[in-house]
Length: 288
Length: 289
Image (cartoon, rainbow over all chains, first blue to last red; front, side):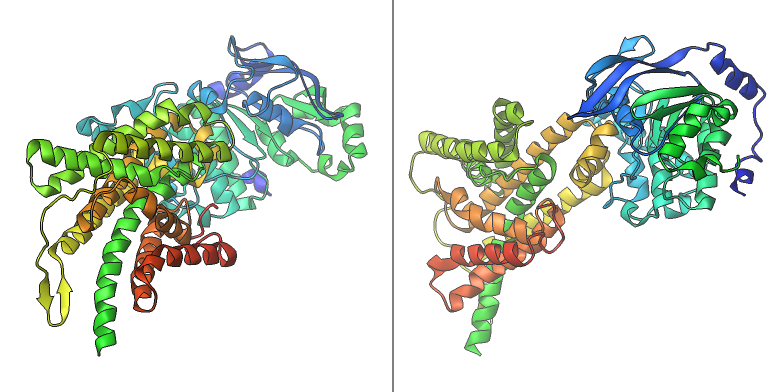
């Protein structure tokens, strides 16, 4: 059972309290307010509001076509909502472009992993502007000494990230040749190159084999506890969700139908109905 | 035996022409990879580079090879100016609009050359160079310098693209634009560097072309077709493919003169380009076209 893989990690003492604190009203990092989006006649997202607390791993689940990915794309700045607003801390970020959000520490990964396929894994990480989010380190281009210093710093960081994700052995491989799971780890590594504060993960577990999935969830967990990353993730693997996420929000037909810890979600009648209606009852039955 | 000697002689010309085409094609390919449009003003950017180099020689009396760095500065500045004044404002529109406006820019640049330097034909050095003879094969010293300069320029570019983070950022943008944008690669800065490098490479091609023959206001425009043929053959958007493409087109153009009138040389390039587009539109190295 894959639940065993990530759990040998020593969990810092403050971890549990932090997780409990989420529902108790910790600082809010992302606030989604009454967001709606229609494509033609289809209401993809219908008046959805919820918040992501700082330091949480918030899950977003729901049957296929529930509008999760659309909502993600709206938060990440790829789609403008018809109505509603998104706040990052207290700043209204509705409609800001992905690269602007990147510099504010809001980073996303893709359901289908993206990579610079003709560059090595190490180069893939090197091109991400490192360091303090928002600081443009590409400014130092024409001062060779500072460029070299900067490069050394970046390379150190790349090695650190490769070690952390345990993909050092493929550092000089072209990223296009990696397996799907390794590409997902690389995706995660890219968010680590910058000081991201909040990371949107779109189905991190999709198409990843079990061994790598364990590694991936371990990495997510450690980034959360050791480095204070806030995660919001879409996932279909209920096992992964129940191990990682609290709270969990459930969407169906564009609307938010339930929120709370996974244990409560499992008992929720509307959620069961949504999944049964969607023909995916088996997934909810998976042991956690 | 005569045929073999002719073949070797023409191959030497082909390699020289190929190295000039390569410099132009790398620039076209890089600009296509990052800005996603075919830059039709590239030939006239070469002309500008060649003429700026000429003026530098005339004003300073410097040795001929100084035309190269001087022309590079001139063409890079011109490319930056054109980008900031024109292309920047239509970057978010469709590629075809950029393509047509670059066509317009080509006309503007050519007119500027005629306005400033007039319609006369110039050359960097007077007189005819005495070739070195190796048996029955003649090698003009200039051809050696042209090849050497082209190799050095390409090597420098290779080091830039693979060793520096800006070079890597350029490759990243041409590899996966969406990902580059969401990972905070500074797109505008990369675009500026692309123009600077594209302008420098164009000037390299222009000056070397001027050394090989003479400077005319239409020199760059006339060579644009083979340059595009080379870029497409190598796989447009793939700078390294442009090297192979440039050499193949250059050799084919020169060797064709064994059987065809020399004035058909551009037609040879054109036929190869059309054939590539029909048979293997992605080119040798799988470009993004």
